[in-house]
Image (cartoon, rainbow, N blue to C red; front, top):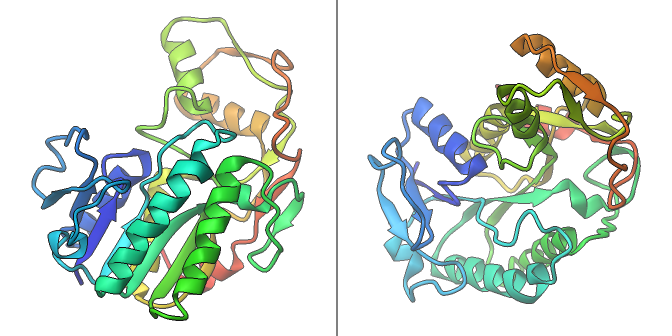
Length: 279
């Protein structure tokens, strides 16, 4: 199977490429013109392509892949930026539509748990979406647009709704890199929220396994939560990292307020994911 990956040099993309390699597949990497290609990825075919201004024959330039794992999305981590639906949404739809009209028949596209909005508790794929930030709104709108497009130009769509990921290569502003940096700097304590919010966290390497497995089904899987299915408090997660790494840093709980753009407790229903893939 010929697989192309957009956003291949990003946090998730690097792990997806590594997982494809583990399965003896050499993907085509679709990268922005300004992207820096790490030496570890240079052995693969690289196609320069800006989603906002793609070449007229992007599908041909990508080597006419059987499947696209689409991870590229600009404007993050500014979840409330109007950029998501004023700029990113129309560009993303035009890019993906052009590929479908050229012959691409299998998509795995990264969605977000923010599509569920402020709904709390166990979140299943059949729940009505209620996005409450610009990023979640734009992702949900793109999925709906693609569903309409499929009526005229059929293709298989797996909409992979990602929950909270962590691991190597994560943005410095994320929780794990922040506490790691604090330990390396010799700080005695680490300031965070009260830590009682329940979330669904997944190592990015495992998420990559799931995404590749979904891609290799080459089926119309619809919406799939990519999650652990198990809620954990942020405090317990951070404490587990401390135990695993032998850190002695103290947690200064309550230094920062809880985020106002998400409920206190929510996690994904992983039953559909587990029925589709085995890793």
